[in-house]
Image 1 (cartoon, rainbow, N blue to C red):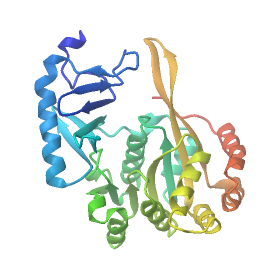
Image 2: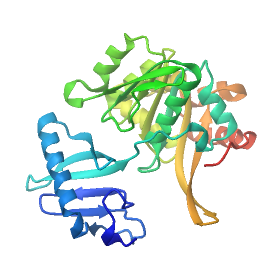
Image 3: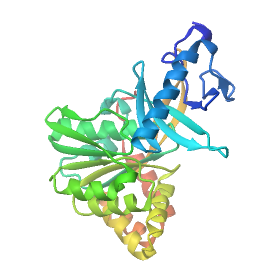
Length: 325
């Protein structure tokens, strides 16, 4: 099919950038990386999205939210340019939860993430668009399917449809609004629910980082995501967020050492296939267990995050790979 005949839902792209009098498509498959004006035959769909975003932003008074059109779900970020014009950046997000077994994680990593007695903080990191949110949702729902119990998902804004039963367990999904207390208030309330597990949306603010580490350090498994390119940068990111709360570096490193259970940093790698090339999810990871547990905690407590590369390589060498996606 030609691009001119495709519906908006059929186009393969990363973002829509919608202003008052324009709409551009970013990351269009097969393009040269430049932004492309939306085809004229999509003007009605674009106008509907523009109106929906305007109404939602004004009614909810939020700078981020999700919306759905023609079965496609978008995460919307609202910005204002120097002329005070509203700009909406819409990123397409998945509406289905990927089967955890299709992620193709190494056996040791999968076994650790799915163990019944798992506690502590599991951080899924990586650059934008690599699949952090969908991977976190896959792990969250797989643990509910296997072990049952109650899982609370706190997100700003909610992206993947998680609420409802999952095998032996049930998930309750809560929208977190920064305009109404953010993660700090919702976590305090959620702890009274006696939930068995938490999924915290992207950790990007100091209060959220502190609360995430505090809750995970008290014995609950907590899954979260953050932007970082390596496991070392992931720990630095958490440390930096918490340091802005005037906490001491030594205290933060001790908190990290006591709370971290696993870091899984994702990247997409293009590999050859029968049909040409496909993108495969590749994790760089470490887990805090086994013979390396004390050594890893000691390095984190000292703030020597770079030294973890030795443990990362050792764990990768000792683990076989699961089924590939």
